[in-house]
Length: 185
Length: 182
Image (cartoon, rainbow over all chains, first blue to last red; front, side):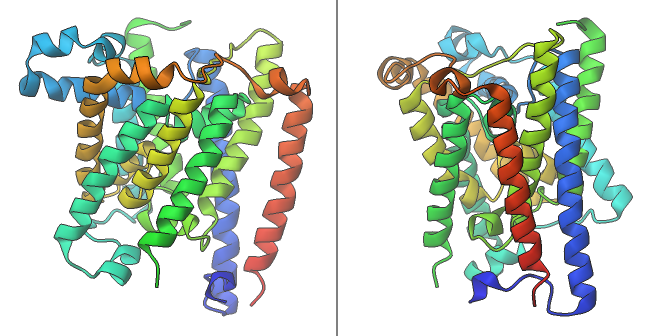
């Protein structure tokens, strides 16, 4: 019954903390919803991350593959590497989380997270390899699907797009299956 | 775009900053919280996402109704969406973040999130290099264009949104009650 025991340690204090955490999830969800209203009206674009990331990957590819190859690529022709709205939104996301965690005094250098080390041990290399390969797969999948958790999962779903709800449901089933295999006992 | 040039670039950092701060405060820039959602041990991610979808959806519906906002629907290229979402789910659990929360996590000091960020840049390069083939052989299969749930079901937007609101309330009440049982 491990699945059904809440994370509150069974104590009254633990329960209050869990309640506060849950309440905060809803407040943050409302905040992201309202932010998406503002962004839709003010910049006429939904919240999204991976289009800008593929621009960034184009910028990284220039020294690796040559500027000509990047320029001639039909995909990067659509997402030209530049310091534009999307890439600066990414910079903002990084800075916002940095500032917010500093103010909250929860900023900490993390090499191997707890849930990983409980299963795979505290060694850094396996975690870094997992993160790197996971990043490759997630990004490739996001581009193939046309968006990620932000562009499809939140922005697309709130517009009731068929593509986005399909993404959301398939992604969740795939992730749950992966977690089941990865964290099997 | 109502705002262009420097103004829009400043707004990008401001809006991105708010998004990053919200992700951090919502604890979804945390590897453990995300992975444990997929293990059904922590429902923070679902709480945040579903709330954002319902609140955002109702607001954007009325903004669109009063001509203050336009919809931006991603094309339903279903083979690409299904294959992409399958890969995304695998990658997200292995990485422990999605692209947005990964970027936010780097800001909170997660160095493995930074390694995964580099992986995402490599993934972006792989996609761009395979794009011509993908476009011809995958994106063109079962491609239905920019369709919305109300279009294919004939059920009105507001019915969908109220139904989602109802599902969210019932689900959240159930989850909250379960958390307070010891």
